Length: 101
Ligand SMILES: [Zn+2]
Image 1 (cartoon, rainbow, N blue to C red):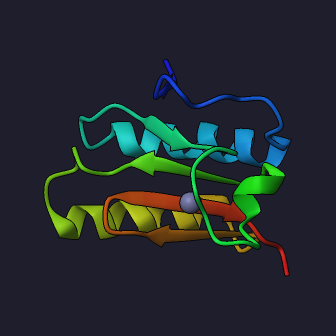
Image 2 (image 1 turned 30 degrees about the horizontal axis):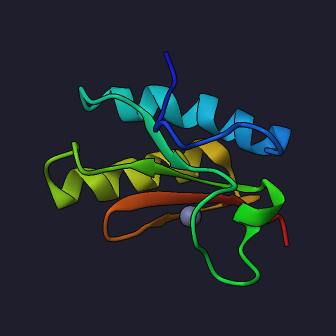
C-alpha cells in the first residue's frame, strides 16, 4: 500500500512521478519501513520548483535509521529511476523530480 500524509493530494501529478513512486516504494520498504509520500504539489518550495508542475515528490526518510542507509536508499532510487530523474537526500526527506534536461 502506498501511504500519503493526510494533506497530500494526488491531483495534478504527472505519470512520471507516479512511476517514480512505484519504483521507489519497494526500495524504501526493503529497509523495513513504510513508503510515505509527504509532498506532491502541496507545501512550500522554491519558486521554480517542479513540485508545482506535478513533476516532483517527497517521501519520508526519518524511519530509515542510519545516514549510511539513507544514502544507500538515495543511490538505489537514483539508479533505478535513471538519469532523467534527480534524487536528493534532504535533511528530513527524499526529494525526487523528473528533470530530463
Ligand atoms: Zn521536494
